[in-house]
Amino acid sequence: MKMSNGVEIPTLGFGTWQVNEGPEAEGAVRVALEAGYRHIDTARLYGNEWSVGKAVRESGIPREEIFVTTKIWPTDFFDVRGTFDEGLKRLGFDYVDMYLIHWPIPFQPKAIWQALEKIYDDKLARAIGVSNYGTKELAKLFEYARIKPMNNQVRYNPFHHDDELLAYCRDNDIVFTSYSPLNHGYRLKDPVLVAIAEKYGKTTSQVCIRWTLQKGTISIPKSTHPGRIKENADVFNFELSVEDMEKINALG
Image (cartoon, rainbow, N blue to C red; front, side):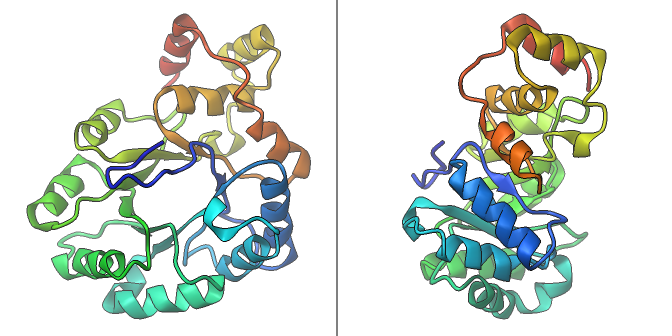
């Protein structure tokens, strides 16, 4: 998928929230890359940037072929550039593909976004954006943004989805990323999902991921189980019907 600045972002990514620094994170990212993922999502808050960077660097895959996103948490807003530089050092990269504000705070000063714009201007991030922003937070950001956010990463799955926000982002040329597309594993045995999964010969996890993709979003499922990591990537050889998409929409 192409962002507003022309940078391509892979539609399927690998999330690393609650994936522990060290062998767990390194191993999970390594398996994901071997399974074909080319989009890895991490964050300062996750505490695993070092392991993510190590797995990417040692994968043997050219750096430019892997899209890596990281984020800044509100407790670090007092020093955006210093926090970014530290994260870049932990990752072991010369640049990141996307840098996001992880969470909005009330009365967020425009200096925070301006610091991201400077990082983008300095070509240290190929794209910048936000996470967990609603329409009100985005509208406020638009008042002072010289560069509009290129991405908004939001919790989005069959049981929790804000389609008004999705439409708002689309109208403003902001790529929408669905995190927690599997709803943390809760309700994957829902009868509606089970029946649809059986119809296509897929798992309910694959159906949820496919649903987020067909909604026009980027999807970043997370798992530390090698089999499930590979299974979650096997979502491009089937298409949900309009009727089945509507059935899943009704779950939210």
